[in-house]
Length: 340
Length: 166
Image (cartoon, rainbow over the protein chains, first blue to last red):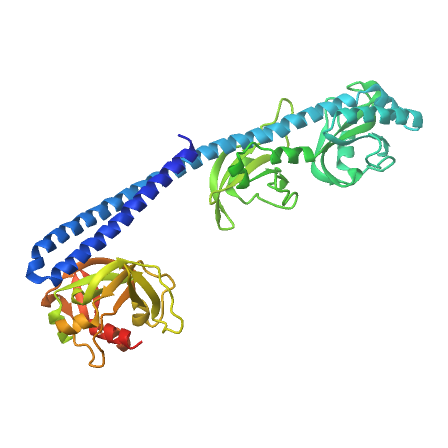
C-alpha cells in the first residue's frame, strides 16, 4: 500500500470513528433524556428507567471502545508516519548522494578537459609566441570552437607567463589583455610540477567572467605539449556554476515533496554554494548543524532537526569523488519540512 | 447549602470549559445537541439568541456567561432545556420568585458537554467552598461529590430567576 493510500485509509478510519462518536453522543443524550422522563414519571417510570440505564451503559461502553479505537488509530497513524519518514529519509539521502555524485562526475571531466586542452598545439604555440597576434587569435578561434561544443563553460582563457590573458573564447567576456597574475588559479597553475597536475579554485565570483559564479580549473601549458615540458603559460577553464544550480533545482522529487523541500550544495566549510531557491549562496553558513558536521566527515544519512522552530528531515551526503578526482569536500543536503 | 437540596433526587453533570457542574434533573425538560442560533439584537450578553426545537422557539442562554460573568469564545456542544416556569411552579419543587409569572416558554442553557446523571443522597452534599466568589456562589445550591469528583450544583431557582429578569 502506498503512503498516500495509507494516509487515505487512516483518514477513512478517523471519519468512521467520528461518525460512531457522533451517533453515540446522540445515544447518550437519548438515554439521559429517557432517565429524566422516567424520573418525572415517578414509580410508573421505574421499569423505563432500567432500560434507559442500560442504554446509558451501552453508550458508555461504546464511548470507551471508541476511545480505545481512537488511540489505536492514532498510534497506527503515528507509526505509519514514522515509517514513512524513515523511508523518505533513506530515499532523500540516496538522492543527496546521487546529486553530489552528479556534480563530481561532471567536474572530473573538467579536470580532464583542462589538462587535455593545455596540450593543444595551437594553444601551446600561442603561449610560446605570445607576442604574435596571429597565433593568439588562432588560439582564440580554437577555444571558440571548444566553447561552442562545451556549454558547461563560461569561458576558457590562455595566459602567458606574465599573467596576461592572450586568448579567450571570443565575444562573451571582454577579458583579453587582463592581468590575472595575482589570481589563485594562475599562481597555482604555474606551480604545477608536470602536465598531469591541475589546480581547482572553489566556487567564487570571478571578475573575468562578469562576476559570474564559477569553479576554475587551471593547469600549466608546457613547451611542445610535453608532460614534463617547460612552462610557457597557463590555461584556465571557468565552469559555469549555473550547471550545478540546475542540478540542485532538478532533483527528482514528486510534486508534493518538491514544495516542501530545499536542496543545497555546501562547501567543505559548510557554506551554501548552490541552492534550489537561490537563497544564501556564498552567504549562508550551515556548518553549525550537527548533520552537516556528520556529512563533512564523509558520512551519508538523515536526521530530524529543528530549524527556526519547525521540524525538518535533513538528508545529507558528502562528495564521494570520482575516478582520480577527489572532489572538494562538498556535500549535498536536502531539507524536508515535516509539517505541511 | 440550600434547603432545597432535599428535593433533588438526581443531578445531571456537565462541563463548562474545564470545570465540572451539575443541575437537578427535577428542573430539566430534556437535553439536546446544540442547535443553530439566531441572535436577537438588543438582548443582554447572556442571551445567545433563539433556536427552533422541533417547531418550538426556545431562548438559548449562555450558562457560562451567567456564572463567570463573561463568555467563552468557544461555544459548547450541548443544551439543557429547562422545564417551563408553569411546570416548576406547579410541582413546587423549587421556590421561584413571586414576581415570576407562570408561562410555557422554553429556555435552554448552553453548556460545553453534558456527561451523565447521578443519583444523589443527602450524604453526598457539602457546602459551597468559601473560596468561590459571592456572586458565583449565589447561583449554586451546594456541591455534590461522586466518585471523587466534585460537582458545583446550580440552583434552578437562581438560574430561572436570573433568566426571567434578563
